[in-house]
Image 1 (cartoon, rainbow, N blue to C red):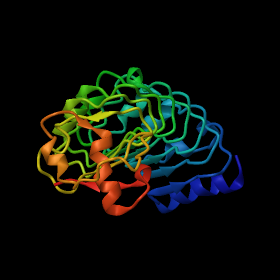
Image 2: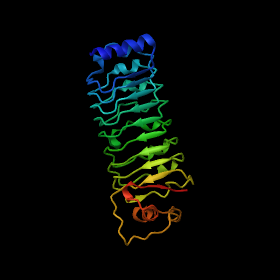
Image 3: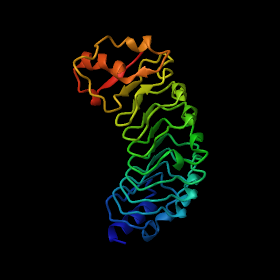
Length: 262
């Protein structure tokens, strides 16, 4: 362990510092950081941009963690003990090698932000209690291997941000309409051809959709007003019809445009 890491641990312990940043230190094993798991007082631990392949069960000893950042490592699996972090609010596991989540992962009663982007996850990777994470406000599942979004997504009623871009989704469940607090829905880069009529059906005006999938709008596409959304709510919404008026109104390349309904 380098002297700088040792000093970080000592200073945090001696000064009761709540935040520890060990990003980009070439760490391959958390157990090599002497004294790390004695810092039970810390509320934030950043280990992004390292070389971790696993997270040891000892993570449960950091019982006061509220923010845990493992972004850009090589983590292939998580211990079941991670669900012991009962105060955890923000968990960043983006850009790793996860293909499954541990049993009991949904037992994180305070979790508000979960980032799982750039992994190897699918609908079969999620434990049975995943959708018990009812405190979630933001869920990032982009750049994974989802073909189906489970209907239980409707249980996450506090979600304000849901990012599903660059998966293999061919449809969205009608239960997505139960996410009445949704502000952002990112679905570009999938294989969607229709959107469920329940989406946005609660009359909220702040939610938006980013254009999802590889449609090219030709000159022949009808350019009507965005209110066409309201006229087609009662049936499946064809993507071409849905986004053509917005492309016309904003003059923006359709695959990067953001849209509002209300």
